[in-house]
Structures are given as C-alpha cells and as structure tokens.
Length: 447
Image 1: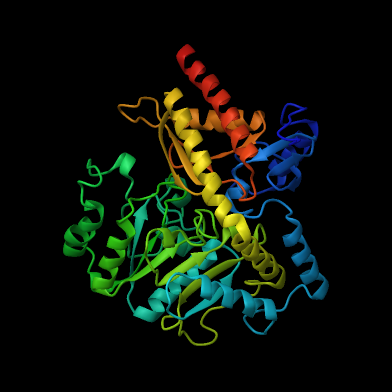
Image 2: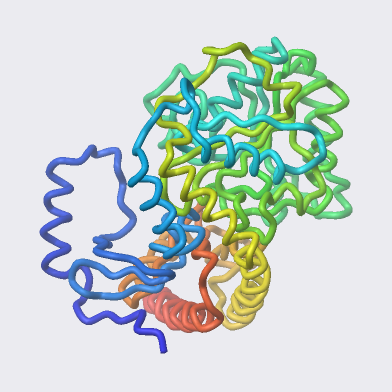
C-alpha cells in the first residue's frame, strides 16, 4: 500500500517557508522556482518535504531521475565509486568506468557505424560540444534549428534555442548564423495545414524558401532537432517527419544532430527516441536521465566525424567517476525492464489522459510517447486559445494535493515521471488531475 501522496501540513509548511526565505535572500534571481517544494528525501516515485508531506513525483527533476529517487542499485554503484576515488580528469587520464560507459553508449547509438563519445556535465555542454564538432568537421559556419526548441542556456546552446523570449532577452548578440524554422507542431500548424495531406510542407519549405532565398545550404554545418519537442510543448512530430528531414540533410551534406537530452535514456520506451522515427543521427546529445540525477552529458558522434585533435575539446568534471558509475547502473536497469515499463505504463497514462479529455473542456490535445506526455490546455476547443494561467493553476493545485507536475510550452502540463512508477501511481495521478481540472474549470465558470 502506497504511503503517498499524503499532505499533512498545507504546503509550504513552516520549515519549508524558512528555507524558501533563505533561498530568496541569497540565491541568484535568475533561478525561477515553480512552486515552494522543499525536499528532504526521495525514494522511487515519492518525494517527502521538510514538513513531512509526501508527494507523487511525475516530473522526475525534469525527466532526470530515470531510475527513481535513490534507487538502491544506483546508490550502491555511486558508493563503490566514491570509496575508490572521487575524481581523476577523464580528459587527461584513464579509468575503467569512463571507457566502459563510452563503449556502452557507442553500442547503443542508432545505426551500425562506429561511434565515439565526448563527455561533459550537462545537456547544454553536450550541445556546445556538438556545435563545435559540427563546425570543426564541416568547415561550415551556419546552423539550422527550430522554433520552440530548447537546447540550453550557454551562449552557443542559447543561440539554437527558441522556446521562450525570456531565455534570450538581454544576452544579444548571440552566436551568428543560426536560422530558426517552425517545428512540426500539428496541433498548431503554423501553415494552417493538416497531416498527412500537408505532405510535410514544414520540411519542404526549408529547401523551397530558406535554402532558395536566405540560407545557402552548402554553408550549413548542421541541423539541430529534438526528436520530440521538449520545453516547447512535448510535441511529437508525424512519424515520417524525421526521415524526411534527414534526407534533406543528406542531400546537402548537412549533419543531422538529434538533441536527446530530454527524450533519451529510455523515456519514450526506446533508449533513443530517434529509433522510434527510423533515423540514424550523425551526432546525438544526451544528459538529464543518463545517470539518474548525477551530472553528466554525452555527445555521441560517428567516428569519422569525431576526429578533432587532442586538446581541442575536453572537460575537467565531464564523465566523472561517480556519474559514470550511476550511468552504468541506470543503463542496466533500463535494459532489464525500465524501458519496457516506460512503453507499457506510458500507454496506460496516455489512455487515461485521453479519457479525461472527453470529460474536461480545458484539454485541447493529449500527445506523447512512452512516459513523455503533454496535455495542452485551451480556453476554447474551436479557437485553441492557450490556457496558460489555467495550466499554472493546475500545476499549483496538483502540488497542493500531492502530485508534482510542471508546465512547458505556452499552456502544456507535462508528464515525465521516473520510469519506476507502478500502475497504482498512474491511477492516482489521473485521479488527482481529474479533481484539479474540475476545480479549475469551475473557477473559470465563476469568473
């Protein structure tokens, strides 16, 4: 019997308020918190706050805690590592788990071509490495990315990102020669078309308009694309979208870079979401869930691309022993059942959310793969007017009732739980969401 969710003190409780106040006094104002959750401990899909409230976690630290909080096999692996040695720079020296993890990722990467890996500390660093590698290998200066995409907040990764204006405001000039085009967001097609009758106009327009008039394709080093749009709204594109985009890249000698920072490590039911779309990326970036909460990023490229000379790229802490140990334990857990669980319980959650869609006028669209699912809220089904404030209220009230969620896009509630959840967790989350949606819709009628 689950002992969560259970709210005994209305959050934030007295201990939480004290810590929130200290945080507010000393932490950078750039850190925008979602709601006043102050964590004391976590286990599996449960988080307990400092006042003793227990929550059902359906955000997993933004798709990070793949194997759940404090999985005993991950904890044991990290303990063994820290008892052996805490650090030796993998860019300058050797240790076994560094080489073992690199080999595992090379074998897991889509396609049969030999691969090589560069390690960093985060998704942003993995993207920066991919940017540098693409320029170094091709000798080309330009890049293509997508409206709604999020690739990170360092200057190069930020230049590729186009999720929210606040991420970029005040930081110009960014990296030059990055062109953004619309993603295949079928629920809100920017061209007013419908799939499949559109014949993927959103891909054809890249060649017919951008390459023809403003972006010389022979100067484009790489296309950076998320297999499923993440921060932009958890938007899976049509099944044939990535194959068409990859074919366009191959036509002009452009590298296809799949940003799998949020979609990778089993979240969609496959190790890489790219596999589900039938494409073999030239370069893949990984981070977030790779080490179940420890900081690591990986840039995986075809071996014939990753030929830059020693010293041209590296990282002091990238692929540190603790993160490598956690990543290897996480991969084993994924292969031994967590990926299959993501696929199976993702189908249950998706079906349950679509059943709620039939009962709640706020839900405009439900979409996703595996345990990466977005519920887009709208004020009117016909106009699809985004219900941004309502989405924020849904997330906040869910927190107050013991369910942890986050928003993304303009008015999307995202579901990205740890892959260790049980069916009982799914049913409880659906029950809480049903209750919250009823309350928020009633508020709207009274307004």
